[in-house]
Image (cartoon, rainbow, N blue to C red; front, side, top):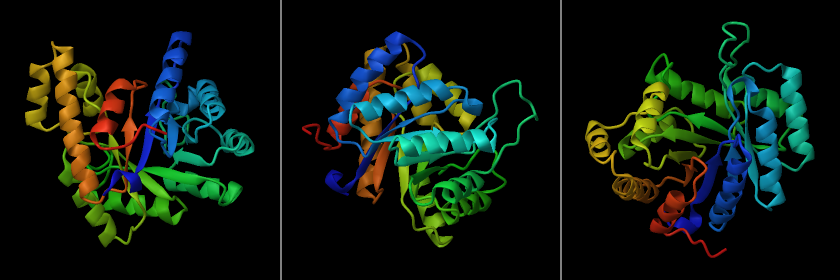
Length: 282
């Protein structure tokens, strides 16, 4: 697919310090040159970053960009979620990323985890068609999934509830994505499924996070990254090559776009986008 027809979006997490906010403002400006469809902003377990997420949503809008805040029930009541939805709607937010969410640590069984399809239905019930709703998909299957087919079934339920498209967990094997899309098509899912792309910049963090979220790092890639883990320049350069190749393969194979997990950094993501032919002349 030509990059001029491919959707591009970037994900940020709410910074905890003033310095982090200043750096993210620069990242926003640099990546904004690629004319993304939106910037998404994560939402901590049980809404633990609610205030800082809202701050970033406002900052992104003030810079003239579209924003897609993450939203989940997690440990929040329906009233709290509805208040948040209404405030986003009133401020002109048009996109959301609706997730099942996690409970804050220490809450145990005190809160009720809700399936994301129920959250999507709740959003549609209270706000109609105002929001373009993104949901999560897992080409390598959610770590808590009952089975491959059940995971595809639950994605279908999110779309039946009113989701517009899905963004995937990151992965490093293109076939995992293509086989997943094929299975979704067989199950009657025709909505766009956007690959989530994680740049390779930190060996230890990637291993730890991937083991916890169920993203597979192929054995050959683990060894290549481990070998370069003491040389940051070498690791980043190698990672850009690998992720550029993966992303190009996905676009060439018909993926409708890319959603890049930036880790609030712009340099590597910017290089990746230029490698793929996205223009930053806007």
